[in-house]
Amino acid sequence: ILCQTANFIKSASQVDQCPADQGLEVAFAGRSNAGKSSALNTLTHARLARTSKTPGRTQLINFFGLDEQRRLVDLPGYGYAKVPLELKEHWKQHLDAYLTSRQSLVGVVLVMDIRHPLSPFDCMMLEWADRTGLPVHILLSKADKLSFGAAKGELLKVQNRIRREFGNRATVQLFSSPKRLGVEEAHAVLEEWLFP
Ligand code: GDP
Image (tube, rainbow, N blue to C red; front, side, top):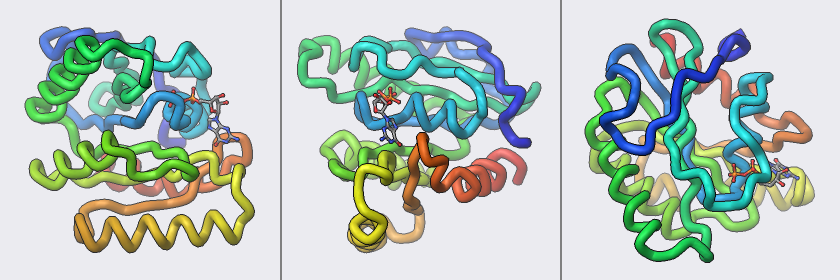
C-alpha cells in the first residue's frame, strides 16, 4: 500500500533545486550497480528509477512523491571507477550538501550488493549517518546470487560488524528484487520512518 502511487516530482542537480524541504523523505543510496534502482522499483511496484543504465551516469537527485507530505529520494549512484575524479568530487559535495542540510530527511536506505558489502563509499555513508544521528537501513541486495545459507552467513557477518561499529543506528536485511525477498521487511522500515 505504502508506495503504490509514487510519482516523479523532479530531478535536482544541486541542493537548491530540491523540492521544498517540508514533510518527510527517505533517501536511497548505494554504489553504482548495487541494485538501488531495482530495489526502488520493487518496493514501489512502479518503474520509478531506470535500471541498468550506464553505471555512474545518473548525477541527479530524483524525488518521488508518495503523497503531499512524503517522498522517496533516489540519490546518485556512487563509486563507478570510470567516472573522472572531478566528477566524483562534485557528487560527493552535492551528496554531502543534501545529506547535511535536508531537514525532511528521516532515514537512509543503503543498498549494497551482498557479494561486495561495506565498500569505502558505504562506510562513508554510515559514518556520516552516525554523525548526524540519522538511521540507516541496509539492503543486502542480490541475495539470490548466493545460496540461502551463504546469504544468511553474510547477513550475520555484516550485522555483527555494523553493531560493533555503529551500534543500533543501522539495521540490515537480505533483499532480492527478482525474488521479491525482503520486501515486507523493507516496507515495515519505510512505514516506521514515514508514518511515525
Ligand atoms: P543501481 O545502479 O544501483 O541502480 O543498480 P540497478 O538496479 O540498475 O541494478 C544493476 C544490475 O543488477 C542490473 O542488471 C539489475 O538487473 C541487477 N540486479 C539488481 N538487483 C538485483 C537482485 O536483487 N538480484 C539479481 N540477481 N540482480 C539484480
